[in-house]
Length: 396
Ligand SMILES: Cc1ncc(COP(=O)(O)O)c(C=O)c1O
Image (cartoon, rainbow, N blue to C red):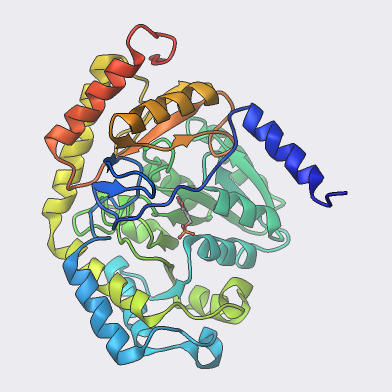
């Protein structure tokens, strides 16, 4: 008897609902165009987080090559044993200066950074208030922590205020993404900052999808809206526009010292490879000095949003470089994704539980190096595929 038959059965169930996920293998470097294993044709990539095309930047590659010569590859131990190396400290001091915070700490990933912050800083007797559309790493970490947690909808901050006003809690934490990863809309940081002031709460902002893309020097949404100084703790995953891996947590020295001493996701894991730090530092330098990448990204996003709007596509609340085309049923979304692939475009179908039931979508993410022809080509392909199927593209 197969010990794992129960899993087989559940996988079959997922497949029958159009929810089974499979890994595809990209054979080329990441960029606006990629090649998949077993397929000689190139595909224009419209679903990566390589927003500023730094994953394939030659200067980043050169920095990595130089670092590997000097430091070798591995981190070799956890940060608190012998794994802390100069490239880690350089990245941390660069980011605390970039964000204007007292201190910063590097984590192996955005997932572990959110886990560390939300399982360690809010404690028993506290309340953590999460935007309902926050990333799974935020939700899971808050769930696993010692504080109570509640969710609010971004369009109903009155509910958030109701919880903030409850007297019994010792401390209050508000946690939001700045640019929402699946909808491409921006959090109302001005209102959240007002509430945090009114209730003496701690405001934690995950800038994963805004870092590099928004703000005068690319520091994110908080910088863009002039509220950088209002954010108590910034979580900045580095796998998106920075095109490396890891995440920075930036904030007061006390918070960072506490994480170093108490966050299990920091203490009990191997230090990030020093070459990763070299990639991060090189990418950040480009982000700060080449605002034209942000300008091109914004222009590309506006261009394609307008094109999709003319088709009557439902692009939700998107105002940024992440533009969902909300289809609804998972199977329809998979079919459109496959048809697009056959026409030379790759956009993965995003389905529940990543997005709410009935809101499966193509999550289009533009890159600064996408050309007008590639953007036009995608809009035309979507138009051809969905012609005569008005049920599929629907404006709310
Ligand atoms: C908002 C947000 N936070 C955190 C993460 C996790 O970051 P990482 O991929 O570095 O683990 C992601 C990744 O998709 C994200 O979108």
